Length: 87
Image 1 (cartoon, helix red, strand yellow):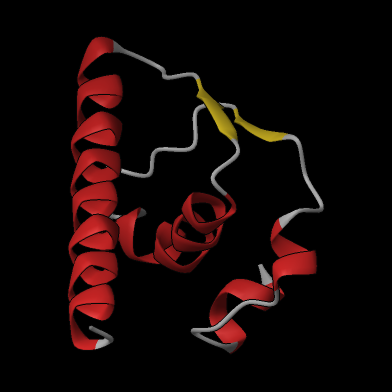
Image 2 (cartoon, helix red, strand yellow; image 1 turned 180 degrees about the horizontal axis):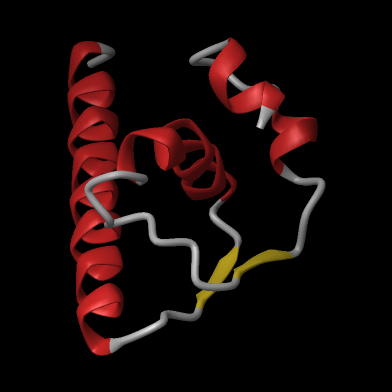
């Protein structure tokens, strides 16, 4: 998590350190926890590794999915905007 919050640019060697991530009932979509997971989730998504999540309930799973989907879409939009400015 240190690398996720310390910089927007993360060295490639750090991103390639892991094969995947498993988060047991993280609650990343829960209103009281969402903000505290933001930096970690951005880091995990930048690694482009496999991510496995479990959830306490269907509601919990749907919230987590909605947050992840939104974060992935934001990341894709940022990448598109970044590549468009380099053309």
